[in-house]
Image 1 (cartoon, rainbow, N blue to C red):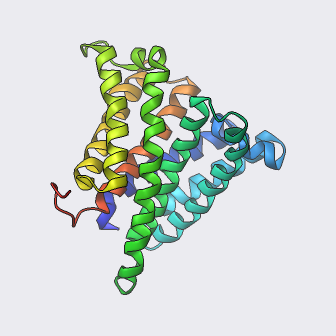
Image 2: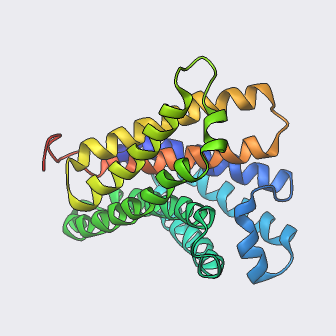
Length: 252
């Protein structure tokens, strides 16, 4: 898994912490609600989700079990994504529904890419098509994430650290950057550069936005939820970037 060591590590940390806190708090992440609606009582479903993430996150840290863990997480996030489809169909013109769906799609793409990068050398040709599929899913998810910066500018701007200048401009620029990265990956326009810059940007979000918020209000379940998802998205982005490591930086 050296091919995607940073993406794998961040993904493992995000899954471990989200799983551990879900079990400890008997559910605190709003993303479990669609599954709970499908399966029944929220607390039981949330605890099951937490256990799966906790076990798989730990397994991702071992070379021997990482590929199996990544595949299990593919199935897990796919189930969550399917459970979110009814809400998306019921509210197709609400950006928040697309943003929520796209976050899960990014994490699905990340787990699929980590699994694909771990394929044995004998399956390298098959793995190449798998990696292409992962990049396509990742690219399709980015526009909705970017548009959320514009639709919910009043919520995005306050997240930017006070010491940074031009908060509104930064919110707009980062939103546009998400969209540009998605277009670059989708149409093969500087794909390696697009994926790497996207990974760097979302990692900086995690460090500059959510780490200070956790430090300032460590009891906030909302902040913990956000930093876990942000870490999973960062891991996904670095895995996508790793999948393009053999491509030229300025390839068009």
